[in-house]
Length: 191
Image 1 (spheres, rainbow, N blue to C red):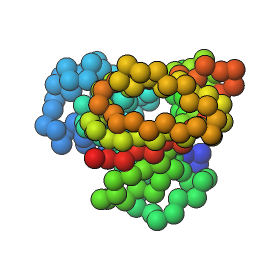
Image 2: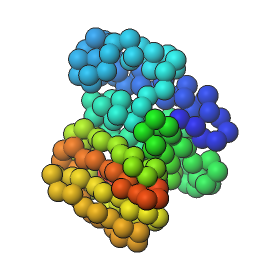
Image 3: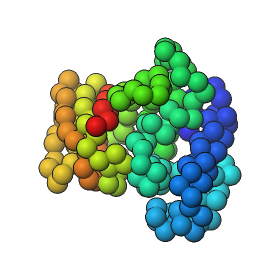
């Protein structure tokens, strides 16, 4: 994860938050490993900040801890500002997956909606397990390119300017068919 200026500090806060979430649930590393499918050693390294999670691993952790990925990423930001300048919005990259996630909305306790920006390279895709918050509503507005979104076994081809709305109840998959990358705004509204 990188916010463009304080790369290490965001990674360190994410590592600490992951450890705190596990202990808040009262889980040992072994129990967290069983629930997430992430090895005990990988969880330990993630919590110590020795390893940066992939999109898939972070998705499994978010599912187990019952929160959307964007919420977790916003939780590692200091304080609840009313305005977050573009240059200060936290950005998380999974270079191997060709995926970039930008947390756009200022975090604030009690708010039920958030906006994120996603970018996928041509040919890249990301899969999410079961919804971390079942029934959450998502709106995907494509700003550039085209994205193929699979949700509830239905495949939707969403082109530039189009907006898709759905409720998360199970797994979902985002894939950029190309020929260019896709950039989209993602609004999540909690139930």
